[in-house]
Image (cartoon, rainbow, N blue to C red; front, side, top):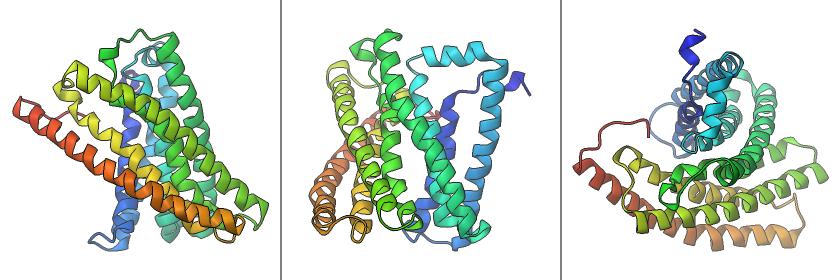
Length: 290
């Protein structure tokens, strides 16, 4: 068992994040199938998370050299952002779906714990990974990868999922503090993502297509675009009664004035990413974890 986890990378947290997102997206969009199906998918993501957390503890305890090598690898280190997003997605699913199984009080506690842990990990990753890229990693402009966005998107996931905890806090300052805190996370992630996105786009334009197995990572750019739009919508929904009227109205305006044009850009990027993947498939791309 100990030997089996030696090469366990942080990229496996993406599978947890994706499973939880599948459950959240399915129930939010009213996809076909009973609600119990999505609760079961969320429960699977919780089980995945617990197994991976145990495996990562073993990895760091018994294979510290390999764990440090992952941090020193510019292709692997950004995936530590997925740890944050896995915690956040499972926590968000607890309140949206898990309450059917474990009850609302327990779901609130679980979401609160995972949101706090996920936000803390996300903030550390948002600082540490760019720092390592600048100081320890030796990267060239042509090595810019959409995966570099992962640690910067994590605070945006906190901004999008944090507001659902607002109604469970005491009225007044606690609710306003959480809402404004999520808004600060929104700004942190948005501005940092815009800086990194310019490097990614410059790489695509000047460096040619990505290697075939990495081509699907272009879709990662849709993450901060979609999550930021979700976040401003959540702010607008919860602001009335939480913050003073002028600010509540401002959040409503922001949801439209920001969300609509950003989703327009997201559709443009979706078309661009699809074109790249179709090209890669024609040139022999096969299945990869990306």
